[in-house]
Length: 122
Image (cartoon, rainbow, N blue to C red; front, side, top):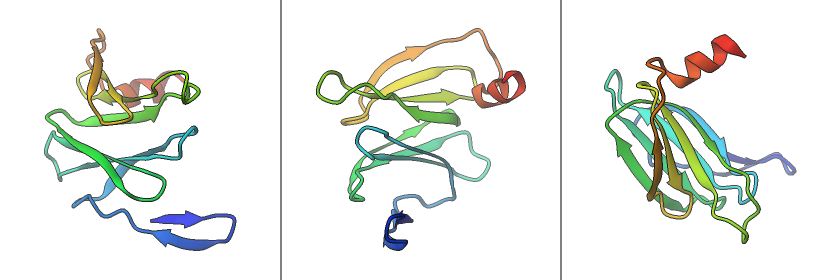
């Protein structure tokens, strides 16, 4: 659900996920919303991006479970922001925030989920 915190009222519900949303991030530059859900114990994830007005920009089903997600914060108009996703196998993928096209994949030497590694060493 999206709430207007200045008026303390309900705005809309984003309902493209069939399962519980486990990860969420909001763009500081545009207000777009990234949400990630997982189908029970399956390894795949559903990544959805909505505009601040609740319109679906796009969605991607990944064959590896997403463990962390965030937006870059470059100034709009000067650069294109990306969505960074971390996976259980240590891979990091960058996606275009405009259309969810793959931009780059970074392979790490870490064979543990990125979110677990971050929590242990912060």
